[in-house]
Image (cartoon, rainbow, N blue to C red; front, side, top):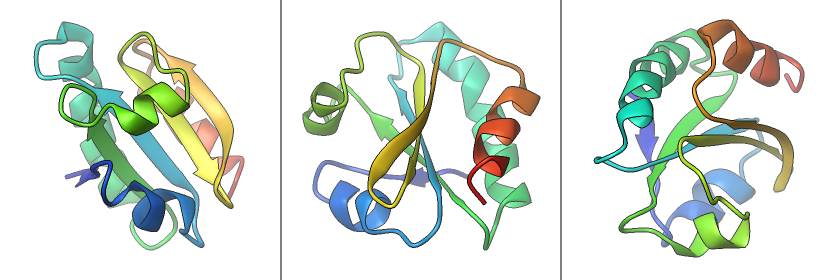
Length: 105
């Protein structure tokens, strides 16, 4: 399963990571978010040791969603070296997310 990240752990887990981190900004009430969740879980297994797959519940953790301009969910951002290097808004096929990670490995 994707790593649950909160406002309190975002800096350590995402911004200070030495590997690329894909962050899924989601909410429990969001239908399309439920479509993305199993894809993130698959990617977690496939990229173990190479990249981190994380998720942020925007209802209970709004600080970084606001900081990075997340206005629609699901929004998936890829961070490398503490900077956003990729962005995907809305549901996309698994291959799209994989390509975004692969570009930064």
